[in-house]
Length: 127
Length: 240
Image (tube, rainbow over all chains, first blue to last red; front, side, top):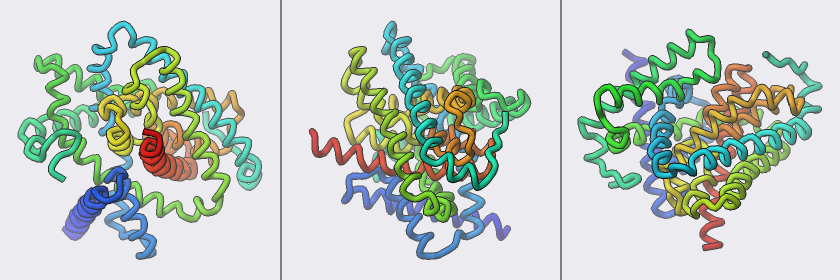
């Protein structure tokens, strides 16, 4: 019961912070969820710790963030109808750009960070 | 806050909204179960299976997918608090973030710029419309930030969200192969790359490699999301 109420309070805290972000976005032209994120971040920095219930709730929400990608992926289907015969080309562009940026990013990150972090702990990779 | 992406509050909390929320969550749970049963292969990712299941449900119940799109406002609405929750792991990783400081930031920012730039270049070369090009700029950041940012720079929020999903899935499908190709074996580098290019979907993949990789992916996801969401509107404000 205690954990349930703590979870509910955390959820309302998230809603409240998000709404604060929405109000702030009237003044600053940035996405409201981003402003909410920053407000919560600085609140946590000031507080110096993460309340247990908030920690568990956010872990749960973020672990299941995938559920929010289902609707957009389905709406891609609607755009597929609009793009019609240009669809394969469109998908090709997106996949190719993802591939290129991924290779560049992986290579760059490994080159810049690989040595110092890699030597500190053994580079083990799971296949 | 009377409207969000053109939907008003009454529409968000309509009974149909709750119905489609239940369908989506049900499909997701089933997809998650199947994903685990089928050995966690990327090709059976809960997002892919979940979308298929919802699509199947639409087909069985003779509802057009556009009907589903009109009533998924509640899910979009819930995405707000979920995004705000990203502040918690970011705060938790504060020490790691400070540890790799400049280099880490540089890597995320460079990696985060390559994606949108190559996408817009390719779409421009093949002559896609201006709106579509702009919608591709937010393809490497997490959905809520992508939708709002895309909205503010003149893209199509729904298309931006779809592109985010496609990018994430593609990147995760390629990830193991690319890491071998580029000899990127360091956990920190793998996590950062996955978070930068493939946002939340990549973070989930990194979490499966190790906690450490997951933590750095979270950091990259937050940093790239924030930087992109801040930089794009400013750039468009100055240019347009």
